[in-house]
Image (cartoon, rainbow, N blue to C red; front, side, top):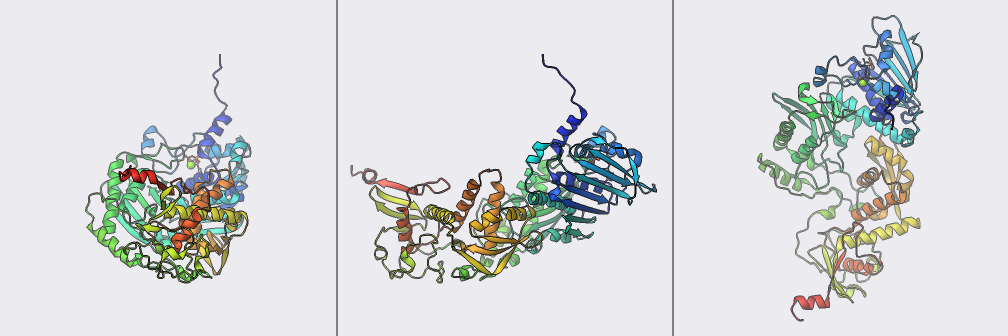
Length: 629
Ligand code: ADP
Ligand code: MG
């Protein structure tokens, strides 16, 4: 019969540590929260080696009495809860009393502390859960905790750690979440002796936000304020002209605690509905204050998720507060500011990057927003893409076979269909009015500005122009990358890109891979990188935006072990971005060029997303449909 045994304390603590302490950033989070709970006004954090070598945090909080030091490291020991009633009225960040015990179990920990009433400080060391005797030490009032060699005795955990830069990026994220929640606390963060952040105490929240994020975000913030009997909502949402493809810049703080909450994030998305392009997500920094009795924070080991007594009410309050704000805010002025100056790029593609004049869409948005009633709006996608002017809908009659210069094709670079490098640019037929003369090869026409119709030996073929072009580009990019012959342009003025900490870390880590695909970057201090060269075929797109998209692809695909799969993802994305879109009017030469390429690749029946690129209607099918047979 199997024996039932009580697990040894050390093992229990290691198991608990597994839940709470996943990586260095979790240690930073727990220790910082303790400092805040101790009433510290100043907290210094020093990190070495992304946190696996050293995490040191020094605060000027209330300190711990010498006779309590051992208890502080004991599991389930806390000064923050006295009875089970308190569990439903938590006003501190911590309360489970397991963080220090967990950290001490899986590291070499030194705890030094001194209270205001004591003449001396005291020091307690713990190595993998084994305590050493307490001894006096010289230290200021407050607490200092050093955590070295994290996970030294849990090799499996250690194996899952990423490169130091990546771990550091997570540390910065954890730091930012708490620094944003407590702007009145002076906080510094140092990594390998380099000062990353020195955040002076401030009463202006926006100052703290600006310390972490770019001016682009800082300048786009719209203040939000709402208060009723149940909840107070304060903070900022970003103007819809500034958004992201992920929700990492959606900050919700509940009574000072950073939380993620699907329902509230949904409310946020709902409030922006129709104001953002499909696939873009809003940015927000919002503080919610609720009676602690109306929340259960004890549902998640790291408390990042909470349960609300009445989440429905909170949802509608947030939604209504934001809607009200949008209805009374003039979004036009901000939306009309061009995102970037043209001509940062050298070379033919340079002039083609025009900021789209979005004042028109801005006005449209405002009118739309003002018409909103309190009812849910109908779903609607408004496409205004700051980067690719060709996306602007074109309402001219179809199909224009005049062969004139296409206003959406850059005159300096008539081969706008980057990819089909057939002779059409040099061709004497470039301005031929007759598509049939344009190319000796395949002819066809464009319908609905989306499909190409042609015939081949199987019958009539209808081709999705975007899917086909994307496929062609994908193959070409792949071939060029493999043969290391991808054309790139040096940027005369390197472009600075402000990234989120995790993006910056990913960028640096992927530097070589990025160079392979033609994007050369250099770290430029903090979370900023410089782009110094860029693939020519992407000239129509903003390097910064493209880099962010690639990083997104890398971060989201982070679980793919095979670098080739990751590279495939990135190439797919680039091909998709560079390809003509549904709605792009094509010149006859471009149509021919595309159709010609179709025969160069064997597997063109499916685009990289797996959708068909072409439908074939055989003679027999057509005859049948027309009841000829
Ligand atoms: P919890 O925060 O859930 O109480 P911890 O294991 O994080 O559990 O900390 C245990 C106890 O140690 C706390 O309740 C607190 O009394 C004390 N403590 C930890 N860090 C500090 C600090 N920086 N300053 C003062 N006291 C601290
Ligand atoms: Mg704690």
